[in-house]
Image (cartoon, rainbow, N blue to C red; front, side, top):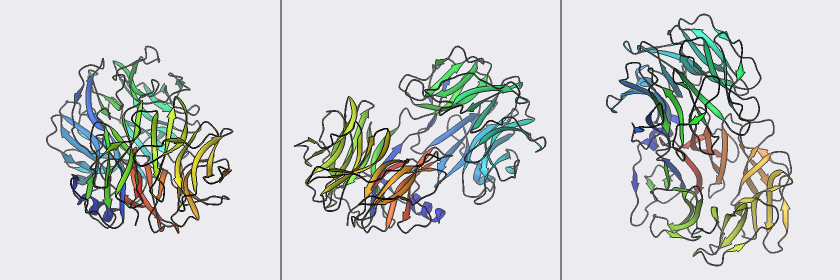
Length: 561
């Protein structure tokens, strides 16, 4: 099923729309994030940044061959993540996953052997099976499964002498660092603490291993001897996340969000001398040293943009309606399907609500920089747009006319109210709100001004979406015993919620089809760090990929009848 859907979508044409839209029937509008993960290199001092790829598709986890001529990386293609190699000038692109005869699934985290003859990476060795560590012989174009077990095996890294591989293994609730010889013998578990210890990288002399650990709710970089002894945390950042370490004679480079924007940092092996290599506002990740320690190859979204796209469910052409140096998200159809409201953010400090015709023409800014605005939702009669506005502190729901006039504050209880959704009769608004430290769903009766709580459990409840028949509200919930979110439903009158999905990946942003029979939602793929739009029938059943473009998709919205 997944292959069939992917094949249909890959065959569609992506173009910039002009004139009147010919898209009819059941159609999804959504946000497409382009150039979200491109490959770059920079010097050991963060200078001399060079862009290697210019592809709208996502490219991740690059690693340079020891002789400096070939880059191995992972690219999203045909609805799956595959291993590719190419020369440093972009020529000679080779699909390693295809050459190795591996099944449809996820392949990622490549690493070169020190002699450049072998690639190690994680892959589904069998259809639907767990991720194993594969060793691919470049000359013979053959692969063998190094870890044919039931565990999920991630992010292999060759030791400097090429005889061993460090990797992480486990499942959803726990990952530990292991070492194994390249002939498959001597598998040894090095970490045993609860939670995740993963993303290992060897010291240049092979005597130590740095890795990512979660001592609390955030991640740190730790170091241990190559036999697992003397484990110690070297970054100690309870307020931020440090991950993806890579080690060479120049020091340990790693990814961190400590400045508010994820970037690449450098430190000494004892954790001292930490400083940012990435530009202050550049979003960089997946660093990997070249063997000589002179350059870092990495993934960056520094040139990412997002636009509003529409795709016909029956297989019609995909159209990109907006395109520019900004992030367009949160599309919302007008009841007559002639207009789309959406949020546009040209910078981190600004986001406005705009409207446009359904063909992308006549775009008009309705909020003009007053506060930070997002989450537009049309009233059923088309006379109002509800939206979220943040003015210095907190967030409240406002309404305005479709031409931007008559902007009025609607919610006044609590400091944070967002994700508005209208009842089909237009008499109520449901939204997510923080009250007493808990995040639950509430409904406001617009006739009486009375607010009613819809969910009351310990879950974190967000992103409500009212069903077309008015009887049910779909929403995103995160249980206290889970690290991911799922799609739930609750009666519109309030009561006990029930899960619609149960996933190892985070599901969010539910949207009802016009007939009320399907829910579109966003799945945040754990392995690919990517967003895809999925669909599930409201009666339950299999989660089916609806959109599998080679770039992230987000915030779906069904076209009204």
